[in-house]
Image (tube, rainbow, N blue to C red; front, side, top):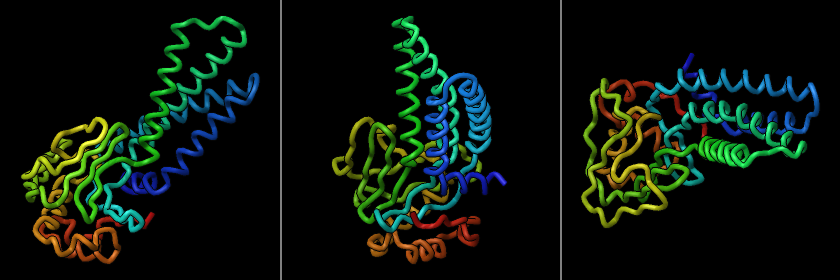
Length: 252
């Protein structure tokens, strides 16, 4: 059930976020008692979304999303960031409504204005993070990791096959074995100097995929195609992802 909910949230994250933003906009434009009802509804939705985010946060699926238009194989979502963003919308809408009301009354304080602007800015950052679905991407040229404030790109020529962690290992990072640091490109403020986040994907699966392309450069050019992904799934040795379907998400 959790896996299906997580996959559906990832697949339709733009729709989910757009509906949340639409509800915030409608509520902000609604006067009087109807606005109060809308605020309460937003708070209830936010609480439910935050609870679901906590539940889903522990899910680490063993699949990648096929993105032929990039081309790339990308880690999914993750779903909890979408729900986390929804959780922020309720309080942010409340702060905006309070700021607008105090402005109409001519009584806004500097502290309230600064606090509200910071809260809305943080909410916008979280929504943008969830909308773009930052994570790890495998390109024909190498491995790229992005987040809202930066990115890290490591070409295949600069990598050794990573060690596959045991199934019980729940660390949120997979260390990369970089042999040519001068080939690594960093932009903005990368979250890590040499590790990939694995709080959104099965670490063993990601390590096996990277190791496969390190060992088989002849297949890198096909990364991003559905046919290559199916070939990759069949070629991976060991563990359950080699024999299960892995829950391949549709192209997007």
